[in-house]
Image (cartoon, rainbow over all chains, first blue to last red; front, side):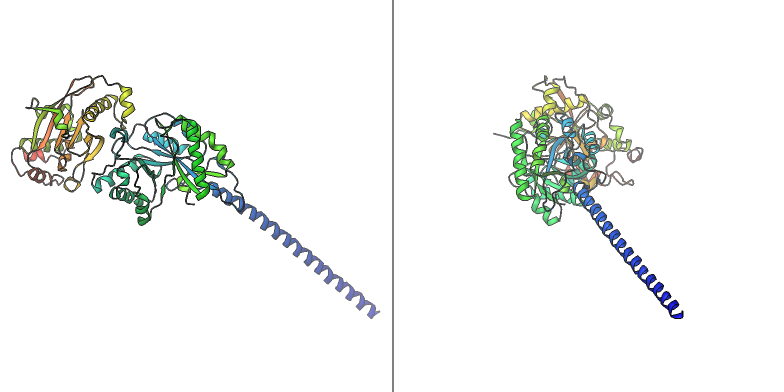
Length: 305
Length: 205
């Protein structure tokens, strides 16, 4: 009898241990499954976020600017999209093409001239429409009438403090400016002392500079390198030489080719007499081409990212 | 061929207006009575010479559209001021003189501030104001020795055939610089008598 009781108890005990093992084993599997699911979900979140930030870079001094919804294209795994920054010069005065350009829902950089009638309103509207704003610094030129340069240009006979004060005033006049480029400036843009003074102010504000390369001897890149300032150079002028739509589209295609070869490119167009509505139309009609060639339109501040 | 200067376009003549009259018409006291008192002190003591010059216009039929196409209108600039400014710039352009609008002039080491002028000749030899100008514009630019003459025309309108400028010139560079270098300090004592020092140091702004 006693033996039977012991045997019965032992069997029960064994069953209990077996049951515990089964229960323990099944909970471990569950934990493993939970862990795997968690890993998959977090990977997905991370992937989505990375893609979002890739498309949604902020600009210096303008952290509230977000990417335009229509520009959010998924990046192809294992490939990097070539970047094209389009700068539109001459905002602030002539109204030809201003509304059309500002309504383009892609990342464009708007260069606004200081001290003009529409300087503030154009900069504010560009910022509101989620474009990047830069100062379009008027500089002395060999060619063209001096009157085209605009008010308070930087000229080579100025003293250093005059140039620095003028650049500071220009930045104070254009709200939301993330950088600067050159208006005209075939003469002043090639003067090392002048450009050095301009870059000193830009460095003090932690902004970037774009050498529009209007002259034959661009000097900004080397000086900027020494001063450790972010500096880009213009690759292609979209308009100016020819007012035809075909010419402008071909120039944009040329900019795309440079971007595909080097990874990034800068193209400059204009509102006003040099391009205006036709330039805006050319950009609009080329948007699908950019997408088909896997070219990403970016702000200038996003080129280095 | 000799390079023409702005002076070559002008016919200089004796004054027909007093400083008080010019100051009143250009609202020179708008920048503060102290500046105006100092200006009077400079002229009364022959540190600044006041003359008059007439520019005959070659074309009075310039249209707004034409000027707006070639020139940029400055912020806060009225239509009338824009037309008057660009009409003068057009005359300068015709004889090959480049000019810029809205430039600042003045030696920061002397007055620690400069003034902005409606038109500045490319080589800074002349600065021109049209219409209203505070008294500081009359002398601040002249602290930069590149600027030889300051021209102001308080009466010009775009339909006028002639532009009459009141011209301010340093009689002697060293005397002028010596007179203005301490102007920013309140305790400045006039080195040359002629104007009431108390009035000159009036800080009313």
